[in-house]
Image (cartoon, rainbow, N blue to C red; front, side, top):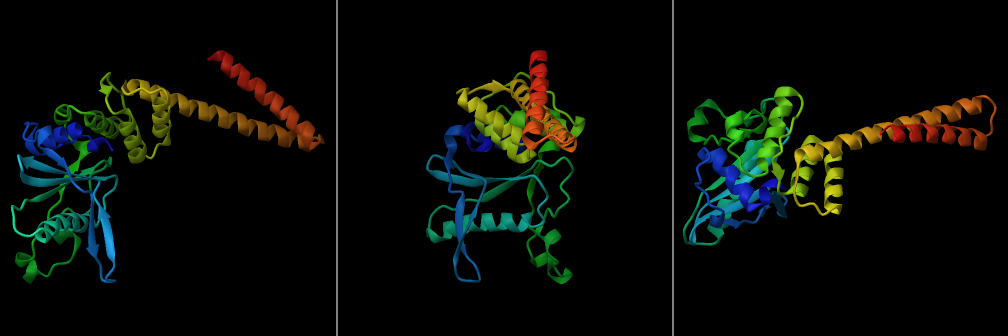
Length: 280
């Protein structure tokens, strides 16, 4: 995950919460457990897991727990989920007894190409009688629509997340992506992230190739060359396979045996593939 790296996490949170000011330093971050447990109505113990969570410290004092949740679609239950995560963080502090307490803050990072159309507050999710509204706290999401961030704000990101955010913004605005020559520091994490959040397996395939080549750094230009070439190769192979099947069926209809029809179809398909390879 792109945000698990301390540098990427601290720079991104500083841009999103503090307008790019270096409020959170890398040496002030401490890993936090992304899993918490709760007891449901069935009295059994259940687990819930955040995407990313880190403690922000000042020396030995914990200032806050800041969690990140990644979303590709608007989840109508997101306010309830965030309350559950934050509530688990407060419950954990209570169980530890007396001592300094700290706030839990959750940022929801949404990567959709249209605006979030789900509830943003607790009151938007559940019906609260008018007479109770002033007594029922209205929990609000800290929601960031990544594809809608201003270009100036995206330029403030100094980690690989800048590449990720720019990718989604360009896809929304232009329907395409033109990469710059910025270096990807965490190639495997970025490509796997894009594969999951674009539902495009070619990014995972590219990640495997780069990993096999032991390349720790690359650029999105090189990545897209691999991705697009892989798509072209798959399309060519699919076309050859379909042609071979059509030829096989046509030869069978003309009275050739299975073996003869298959040999003829494979011969023609191989010649077509050879011609394509020679053109490259």
